[in-house]
Length: 414
Image (cartoon, rainbow, N blue to C red):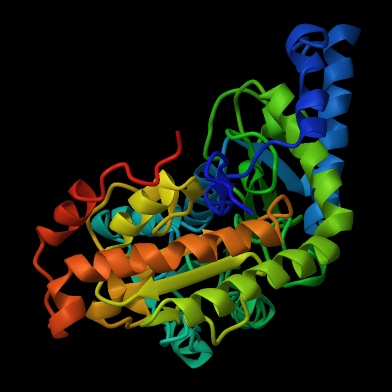
């Protein structure tokens, strides 16, 4: 099957397409049901009821005991900031934060900022497979710890952390536990009511809702100081007029995702595993990063030795294939992935990492097409690389631009 005139979208950890049924659910709230949900009149209060319905749908997706525990936000970054800052403000006598070296920039950047403000941050390490050492976590917890913030699943490698065990450790110490579940929601089962989780962040555009809307779960009974101050919206926990249409879309996407998680997970895992098997066989000197751990079913991070990931992406894009080198929030950075560096990925494998992230809208034919295209790209770039020929551990910086500049438009989609 040739797909030269089609896009193969293997970048679903960056964002996903909005489902048609989600878009359809949203549209009336732009032109027909446009009342302010805070208004007393029926035109507004009817919209408020629809927001309540969406809150229940999101609560069901994450397994919350009570929809009131769900606060609507603008995105995952806001949710992470609100959770961590909320815990620090609620516990002003405590100045210590525990997180990991492989968090998304939403947590990583905030904790680096807080370090400069005088907070002490413990950065937990991971092993070569991306797994945490729970003994290290146990040693890091102190009476001064205000919050522990750890992701459910890594956005670059898909590695899943043992959230239940981590939560049990933090709860035994009476320390609030925040989980960034942005990549996990809609892909694997979540049941926060059965787990020792105090706060949890999700973002709609990772599971076929629109961009610009997310949710923060705050367990009943946890003391939480609002991040956004102003009006009474979200039960006085997040001020600002609600993004009604997007909230409706988030609820619809949650409702759609919940019954499909098991079947969709099995389907995309089959595609992911086939992609890895094919590429490792057809592309010499390739390896899966994080493949030794339990991972999200849709995510594969593959390194191609001595090559530059951005050069690979440019050539893939010319053939209609969308992938990434890591988080979309760090795209454009010349720095190697902080996740792979934390895993101790050797220098000759570090720069050549490509993340493929699939969804239920992908197909085996697309996987086969990627495998048809990738070997020629790898061979082409290896031919340009002195490293590929000489085995030198240092690659001249200019080779990336040479590889891209000489790629030309041959094979590009017309």
